[in-house]
Amino acid sequence: MTAETVSALIQSIASRLDAVGIEDAGIDARLLLRSAFGWSAAEQLGQLLTPPPVNYLDNLESMIVRRESREPLQYITGYTEFYRRNFSVKESVLIPRPETEQLVVQTLAFVRERGIETPRIADICTGSGAIAISLALEMPTAEVHATDISPAALTVARQNADDLKAELDIYEGNLLKPLSGQYDVIVSNPPYILASAMLSLQAEVAREPSLALDGGVDGLDVIRPLFAGISKMLKPANSAAYIEIDPPIADAVMKLALETFPHAGIYLLTDLAGLIRCVSIENM
Ligand SMILES: C[S@@+](CC[C@H](N)C(=O)[O-])C[C@H]1O[C@@H](n2cnc3c(N)ncnc32)[C@H](O)[C@@H]1O
Image (cartoon, rainbow, N blue to C red; front, side, top):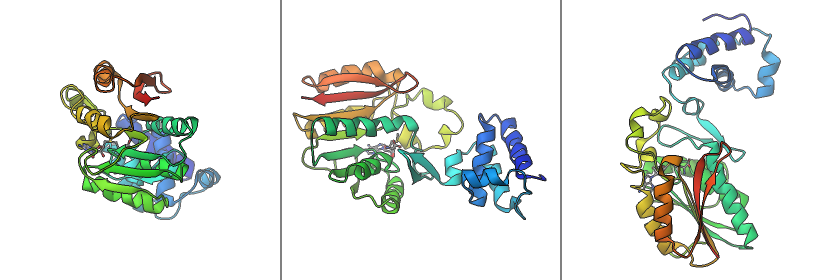
């Protein structure tokens, strides 16, 4: 692959990515180039009409080949943005999604509206730590605890907490088992994809850990024990739980929530695309 300018190089990479069916191939081409050469967006713009750096294929070619094999862009560049901060990601963790930021927004709004000055908050199934770390940084007076069953995911979460200088406690274990006492807010983005849908995942999603995605036959394998744990560890008053879900399991989750939390206000919240994305469980 030869190119006389950076702009032409972007076009060549984009057509290779387009040829394997990658949507937004032009955006991925730009981001791969920025990552390979350590450029900011502004620096890249300034270079568009200049020749590519000497030996430009040294790093870049292997990155393009990885992306052509449908490895997610974020695993190749090593990071993703969540709630305005960069989080390291690798194959051992789910790549945090923009729609999951809603759990952070809901939690911050609840704590502020209810005037809870030093909230105890738990993020269950923390993965890269994106939710828990964002909450700890946005609300320095909060006591934030996070759990995950995957030791490899927790290595990434601890690294992110160190890099971003967030103060929180991160525990390895099954759901709420490592925790004690009661919480003002419990958030979680658990695995919830139907086992039947696991067979036809988008190529990139199929590269993420199945432990992070697979919700079993009805999508509730993890949500059922999660709700049971939350019902014991959520303060009975002035408290809330926000759990990410998706439309195929919304009715079953609503039924389970009504049974498990008979005294709470329970709502389904939609994301910016208008899809059901979260069950909100709030106690007066
Ligand atoms: C959908 S990912 C969410 C990761 C992160 N919270 C996010 O939103 O980007 C689900 C996470 O749940 C973890 N997990 C799966 N089963 C678990 C269990 N029984 N107890 C604790 N964590 C679990 C997986 O290791 C994975 O990191």
